Image (cartoon, rainbow, N blue to C red; front, top):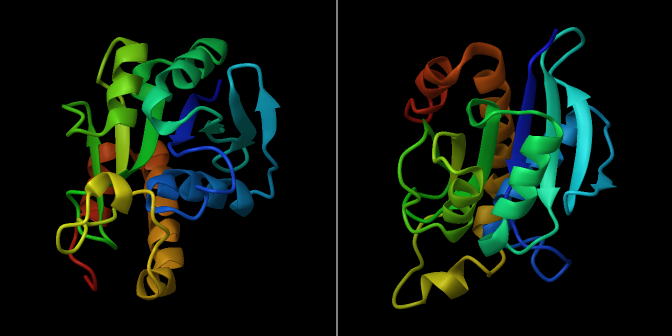
Length: 195
């Protein structure tokens, strides 16, 4: 029987936030669903879910976007993990990361939350930090802008030109993790651009 993977894009609900840096995780999950022409439906775990497959005969993918705000993402993630009987080793959280430059990805399993409140809440709700993460770099704000404001701003005009490639790369990274494992995905996506 094919493994089931829960792929969750973190973000905030509603049109006010959908184009902001904090919602890049949801943009990546949208890309994964669009590749498979799979619509999202409301789920009782307070999330929108698209059930699909990596490819025919391969792993089952549960693509999810919590309806909750970022800082309380854990409840929907834990609810979905229980509903689909998915353990933390098969949960991939896709989220924005201030400490990684824009247009870069970092993939990891476990570890601390690095001050990311959404990741912190997921670790608390799952009762373990041992889930996979696709960290999408958004960079730090210029000058003295508060990082809390920066993450809630839309991407700049310059960033929006590159953003589709970054989202596509992050979606590719999720697929590679599911297909070939974390180490193979890290070897592919941690290489400097152009290699």
